[in-house]
Amino acid sequence: DSGVTQTPKHLITATGQRVTLRCSPRSGDLSVYWYQQSLDQGLQFLIQYYNGEERAKGNILERFSAQQFPDLHSELNLSSLELGDSALYFCASSSGQGVQTQYFGPGTRLLVL
Amino acid sequence: GESVGLHLPTLSVQEGDNSIINCAYSNSASDYFIWYKQESGKGPQFIIDIRSNMDKRQGQRVTVLLNKTVKHLSLQIAATQPGDSAVYFCAENRGDYKLSFGAGTTVTVRA
Image (cartoon, rainbow over all chains, first blue to last red; front, top):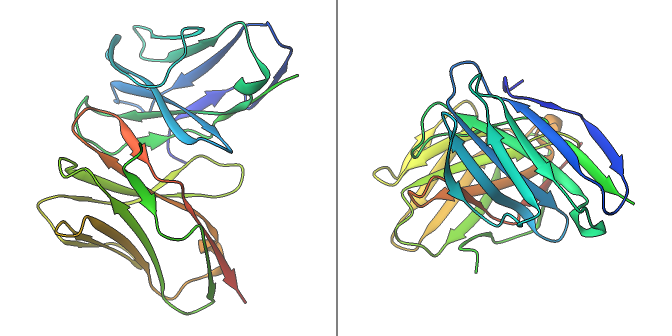
């Protein structure tokens, strides 16, 4: 157990809908990272927050957004969902914002029908 | 394109033997590398890391070797066990806060 929690574990929804994925980092960690894992793209970095502020952006679509709250939990919002958004979404956390080990949560499996 | 990749997508190893998983990278600026293990249905689990000022690091039953000259990273697992069956990813950090992952090597341990 990495100490990172994610909810929900599974999510099934329809195209065009909007969902919110939630992540709680390890106790004491200030950085949260979101990754998408699909069969054809592997693990892709989406976005990072550090202590409530966006720090780095990767291959995140404009339909996706995220935020980190004062209690350091983070939410990833996915809107106007398409079939191709079906994937595993992982959250990771680290203590700082620089080059550090990232610890991953168990993921949320999203299926868009 | 992605600079982190693994030489072989699959590796089959006899239980008790040593496993070697390889990874090549192309970005000379990469200064931190991590090996992760991902079991089916779970998130990537940290195994071991190494910084670019080192060429070898050992953990429990695992050793990571870094050859900066040829931009090569390897993970050695001693006395491979059935519980070692998983997908192994190498990841690099280029100092820009994100990790870039390779495609992964699926390790299957034969009894």
